[in-house]
Image 1 (cartoon, rainbow, N blue to C red):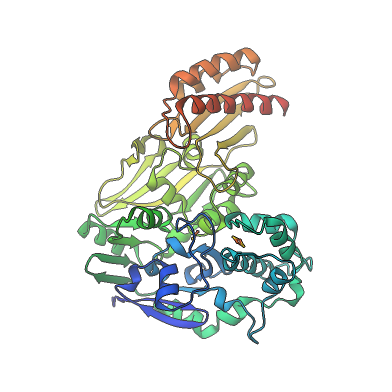
Image 2 (cartoon, helix red, strand yellow):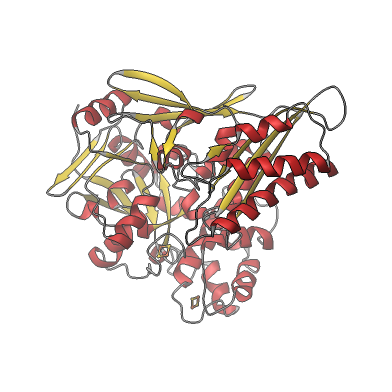
Length: 487
Ligand code: FES
Ligand code: FES
C-alpha cells in the first residue's frame, strides 16, 4: 500500500499538507509561527487555560461536529485527517463578527484579551453543537448552565466570568449559521476521507510519526520500532514536551484505524476501543452508568476530553489516573495485541508499580471492557482536588456495593478502589472483606476505617501530605456510609 509522508488537514477551509519538520511542532506554534495566525494565544502551554482553543473535526469521527481542543499540546502530525477552525475563521462568510463576538463586545466580556480568542472559539463550539442537534433549536438563547459547562476549560484572569457568561446568554442562536456548512464542504470531506485511507509515515532526523490504517500494520511497525511511543491525544506527552523540554521522537497513533473508534454495549458490559475519547465515553454511558458520566464531567476540561482516551488513561498508569479506580471495581479487562498475538489482562494485574504496567514492548492496548452495574448495586465515585473541576486529584475513591436480597442494607459484596494512596491505583481487598455480609452501621464504619488506614500507603507530594490523604481517604468512606444509609 502507498504510504503518505505528509499530514493533510484543512485550516479555515484551506488545505495544508505538512511533512517534517513542521509536523513535530505543536499546533499552536504551527498556527502562530508558520502561518502567522496569531489570534490563537498560548498562556499556560499545558492544556489548563484554554487560550489556545481551536475547533476541530476529525473525519474518522464525522458523526460529530467541530469540537474545541487545546492546540498547545497537540503535535501537528496528529491533526492528519481533520478540519480545523481558528479564531480567524469564526467570523461570518460576509466578514461580519460571529454572534459570539458581537455579544462579547456588547457585554464587555473582554479586558486584556489574552483569554478572549479561546473563549470565543469555545462558545462558537457550544453554538455549533446546539445548531447541529438532531432535534433542532429548542430555545433561541443558550442555557446559563450549558455556557458554564462549556467554559470549564477557559480561564480568565481579569474580566471575571459574569460578563463572559452574560455574553454567552445573549447569543441569538437563530441568527447563527453552522460553521460546518461553511467549512466542511463535500469536496473537503471527500478529500479527507480519501487521504486517510492511506497510512502516514513522517520521518526526519530526531522525529518520526507513524499512523497506520490497520491493526496488522500497527503491530508490525511496533515490532520493528520497539521504542515507538503510542500516543492517543498527546495530552500528557504534550505537557512534558512544553514544560520539561522532552523531545517528541518516535510516535505512533492509532487514529486512522476504524475499529479502535468503536464503543459497543452489551447487556452487562461495555467494550471501549482504544481511540474512543472521554467525551464520547461520557455520552455513551450517560443512561447506563450516570455516576460515571457525572464523574467524567468533573475532571479535565472539555478540550482535553475531546481528545484524551480511556486507553491513554490506562497506559499512562498514573496513581491518580481519574478512571482507574472505577475500572478496578468494574471487573475491567485490558485487551492487548502484539505480533505474538492477543492477550487479555484483568485490570487488577495490570498496574505493577509507579507508572509501570505489565505492557510488554511491542504491545498495544486495543480496547478495554468493564461491567455495567446491576439494579441492586450502588456505585459512588469521589475525588478531592484543590479545584473542583479541571484539576488532578490528590485522592480519589470508587465504591461498588452489591446489596444482599436477605434484608435491607445488608451487603452481599463490596469493591473498593482508591487513587493517590500508593504507587498505583489500588483495590482494597482486605477492607472489602469486612463489608461483605455485614449490615451498614456506625460500628461497621469504625472497623472499616481502621482496616482502610492499614491498607493504604499514601506519601506526601505537592498535591497533599500523607496525613491529608489519610484523612480524605477516611472521609470518602464516611461519605459513602452517610450517603448510602440515607438512600
Ligand atoms: Fe493554556 Fe493551551 S495555552 S491550554
Ligand atoms: Fe484578560 Fe481574560 S480578559 S485574561
